[in-house]
Image 1 (cartoon, helix red, strand yellow):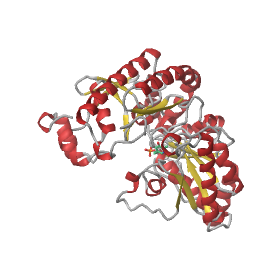
Image 2 (image 1 turned 180 degrees about the horizontal axis):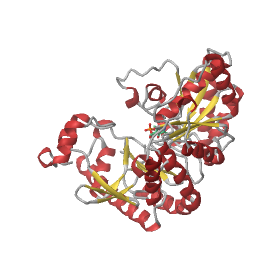
Image 3 (image 1 turned 90 degrees about the vertical axis):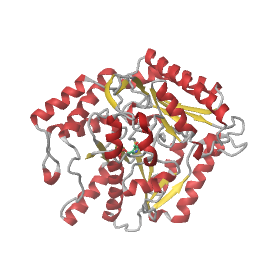
Length: 462
Ligand SMILES: Cc1ncc(COP(=O)(O)O)c(C=O)c1O
């Protein structure tokens, strides 16, 4: 993008001072960061005032868009009243209690208690600790391994990175993989075999899960963790019937299902929870992101009664439940979370997503006709476009060609922010997006893909 000589003062200060997450650190001094200064509705503005449609709601999180006055006021009022307090050692706060009660009310299955964290990673990390603690409480010290899927993303703490099924999460970080069992990614387009029907592909995934459990022994496996729709893997929607089929296997082997709803919670898939859209009956649920529409960091773990009972028993044995984060359940996040849930309810956010999803799907599917588009995927108001070298054979570009990153840069030129996941471009716009804004987003996307196709035809990347 920009050459070093053109970097602004802020970009230089940034490159010299911030260790950026998920960034090509080696080239940042040359490219500079995109400095985002303001946001309103579905738009964010850079430091030069250029407007971008935020096609990924930040990081799949700002579901109510930017500059929502009600959320801002809820935060201000809470800071005025009680800017901080914690939940350790049987202290509590009103917003935390209110939010926990509201989450229990809207949970897709009956839940007993809510444990608050500051992020999705911490929520999933907590889930793993809970599943271990639970099995220790039940006197099953060997039942500890966790099944996770190829292409999964559950965060970046030491354990959640180990659960992730994307190579960048492990590469040279030495995350402990000894308690992780890996199973198939249910993405038919990429992993279906030649002449294999989607139904046969699904059957194969279920058989291979069963085989994995038989090989390891169910007595050694605590849980499986899964996103209803794999977001960071490239918006991968499983075949119909996938979750009921794998859940039957897990249930039969007394293996918990931890549902990672960090992206899919709060309306995104056209139901309040991805579990409802994908027909999942989770044992435990992780949520974060849209919980506060990203206006404050917050995550929540929902725990059913049978696990709560075991936690209480273990607490009695050990003296207390020794887990918690200083800022978990921060009153600022909880007050904003309560307000976000109130707004989702008032706006009928689920109805709104369902209303706009057909237009989203229509415009996204149309992109299939473009050169180098191998597959488009969607559910509710999240989707992706996968670029391929050859539409017939589905042959991919080599990773070093960084075609997805190039396309995301063309999107920036067009005033659209999308996320490149390999050579897939992910879309997850704020759920408040209007029909006109959605059309504008796809007009920009079409121009982006046209520029990308020109560039590919010209440069012929490997
Ligand atoms: C499904 C899923 N789980 C967990 C996480 C981690 O959340 P956080 O970045 O808040 O730690 C993410 C982040 O994108 C996610 O997509």
